Image (cartoon, rainbow, N blue to C red; front, side):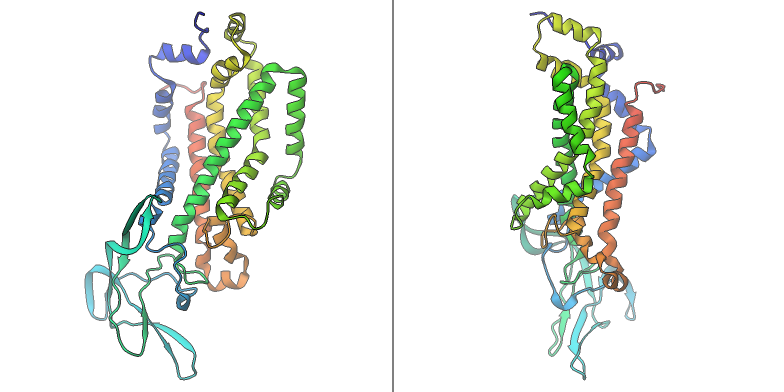
Length: 382
């Protein structure tokens, strides 16, 4: 059987002498906001992948006596003089004359910040046993009668005395991956159903489009809640994680499928598709190999811009207690403390996870905007 006719995508590649991905990358590099967004995403994903190494403590490492501890002050000087090495003052916990527990910094001691320290045993990348952490502090000198704590809380502590920075690093694994996996599932469903609907038309098109419209007519957030309540309440954290992904994907595919259907309707009448049919190629092969690749530019941009929706969707479910459950951290369930006006007023550092959600959403939107310009076939080549 002779080769299938060349599509416009193939002709463009042959004319330029290089793959479209390299042409798009050159155009993307010219966008400063796109590169800024890409840098933000690289940092956030590095936090997620290397959380076991970057975080100074395990996500559930508690120190109840230091609940709601403010961000630790890292110093280079005190009453004893200047130091080239950063240090902190240990916290002394004691009982006053009224039998109340008091805490104050012991300025007579210095606990130096060290890099590449040995701490609790954990698994790097969930595979390699190790005790190495990126940074930590020296223990305080033991003194009889008082209890001393040296906890390096870069962003403060929560109600249980857990390090918020460490929990943000571990929470990035949930919040930054749920969008990728959810978007991938939505992409597969949207491309398949949209491609079939647009290519075959008729009754198949009507049935798929009406089904998608039913889902689109339902209010998105209430549909999320309805689907979440369909799952058992005693699910494990891993099961909840995949359940949330499935829920977000089931809600998100109709919009993509509808746009793909419209693009396929315009592509299926092209000469190279007619030639492929005349050669007797199977319809599914025509759809997958010749039709859908010509929607790649829109698909890449659409998926990039849709990932923030999954991050926000997971955050909304977790804030309401319907998503990832404590002690497993996600940026969403860490914001539950911000629902209390009292806690928010007394401990404003509980909002730190919200900043990281904002950075992730902005990073994907900046990259998506830059990709849209780079993949625009009508842009002027420079």
